[in-house]
Length: 241
Image 1 (cartoon, rainbow, N blue to C red):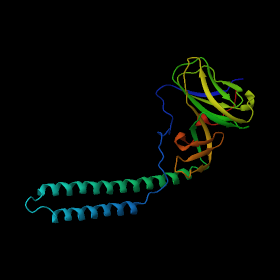
Image 2 (cartoon, rainbow, N blue to C red):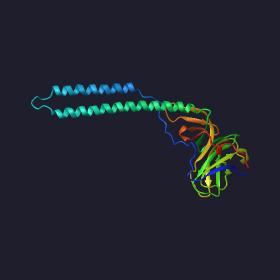
Image 3 (cartoon, one colour):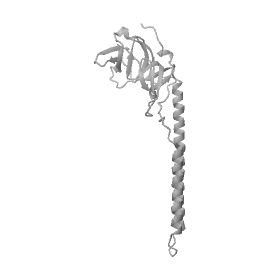
Image 4 (cartoon, rainbow, N blue to C red):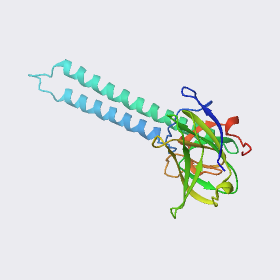
């Protein structure tokens, strides 16, 4: 028996709703007050030194006034750069907080994620692969920690997206954690695999690194691996043939 290849999309097609990869910001907020205070202190120190330099200059050989203007201009540029740095840091913290709140709202929602690992149980696995060339054989390999390899053939496929619906029991795949990969007769490497699942929870690492989603049938994946919000009809459960 072979897995049900639900559909194949020709080149040029775009996965509906596929968002561009996203990047995460640190959720550790810097203290803008401290930065502003430091900037003010630097300005005061500079002005104090400048006044002292003017007061103690040699009356017979006074400093060229343009030098003072140049110094003041340089200090103004430094102060402006400090203010811009504080503003950019504040905006980054705000965006990070908005991002975290948005991720929290995903709990319970169906999504698709790109992955190379799966946590297999008794449930069917719904997803898709994307191939560049027409292939007479497209096989999905499930490899466990002991090196046992289970092959699920998808048959002959045209270039583009190929949706699949796999019942692990049909291929003797026991529950457990697996590395998944795609092998084609054309020798394509690193064929992307997307799997549908529901977000169980969202974990925010204490070190401020990328938030992690716990997705049914997949396990924990960085939120940047989301390839689609919601699940298209061709990745929904289908009857095996």
